Length: 331
Image 1 (tube, rainbow, N blue to C red):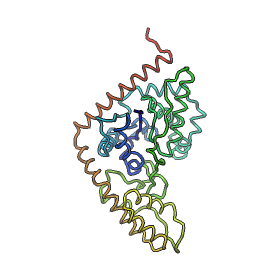
Image 2: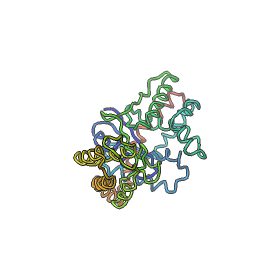
Image 3: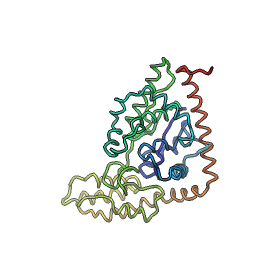
């Protein structure tokens, strides 16, 4: 049974991109693999160094993981900062991570462009922390989206570099787990090709959004002026709406609106109204579970404690082995 690891940053609610990109598959794979799912609260500080309410954000992600179907008895579900061994391995890997390779990372260059006043050391070494998260459990498979593939490649680099430097084969090389299909990226409502918490306001549909909020967001989604004649090429914002519709609507509904677009008779207002109702139908059961689980503080405390214990058992063994390999000894 292979070890699989995945994490989500604790900067707020989970959204449909998270769900369709990975979480729905986590529910299936947790019974087939040795799975570790974690809430990356350390990672969130790279872009939000002074969070307004870090604990609330972590709690919300924990609730939504559980509501989506992650079973803490079957998989290991934990909070990153509850496992101090991660920080120690991060430190040790940083000793062999080079400034040039970190600066060449695509996501680092993008973040520098977006947040020029907050280019911190954690942002630069983000791939190292991600590598520590993965190899602390000696994971071999990691579910990632297209935007994280380079980070996974760097995790392999750091694992292989450790093995080479210390003449060992201790760390396996982690590879992308793509659920036997192409890696998925759900587009945003603002016309961008990615749905995410860090994008523009109104870009994402969150699992906890109520019907009123969903309708408001979808009706404000970016489109274009519409096709003027049959056979026109579809713009990216409109493609995004159809991608969302394919995820939550029936095939008949998708085919109907695609035919209307092809014939240049489509009314985007009608498409948005239908899409909003289909999203509401899809997310309502999840939202009900979110509200139910979120009201049970005792259960959440039990889940977090159990996850930390299970994760630290695995991580502790790795750190003991790594210390031995490097040469740390007690006198």
